[in-house]
Amino acid sequence: SLKIFIPLILSRPPSSAMNNAFNAIKALVSGPTSYALPEAAPLATVASVDLSRYLGKWFEYAKIPTPFQPPGGTNTTATYTLNDDGASVHVRNATFIGGKESSIEGKAWVAEPEVSSAKLKVQFFWPFSGDYWVIQLGDAEDYGYAVVGNPGRTSCWVLSRTPTMPEEQYKGILEKLTEQGYDNSGLTKTEHSEVKA
Image 1 (cartoon, rainbow, N blue to C red):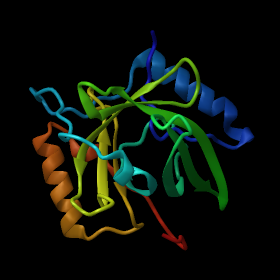
Image 2: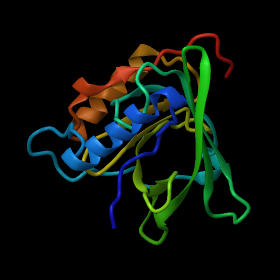
Image 3: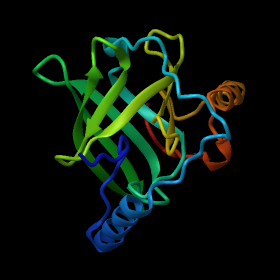
């Protein structure tokens, strides 16, 4: 089945619907750009993810832009809450474009619980789903920060519990990403202004 990586896909205003569709089709036909360093080893995830600690609101601190996210989005967040089934997670991604909020909702689940709790699937539109691999985590009670990638290294999200992050911490994340085979040249920081943690 056809699968695309869309953990932080966001809807666009109706006026941009055609551009959104065009970019999605283009990505599916040409394939997304890989930011893997030459001879990079298979991407490794963290050992495990405690879902109860991972749930809640995350701020997108930095990302490798994808065709599925509207350009120029600010104050971008992802909020995760446990669904009634006790296993899957409700996902709400939101961003602001021109002062107006654009959001989309979907679900996530651990792909193979018996293998790894750090490898999830995310789905916003059936039957498409994408890989959501947690490859770095902070050591705070709520993890503090998380880094999400995919096996082909075509995308990467640096998430934080707060809109800001100490520069030394971000530098350490980038160094680790390089060790994990990522070309960090594609990462861009997300603007956050007048937001409440």
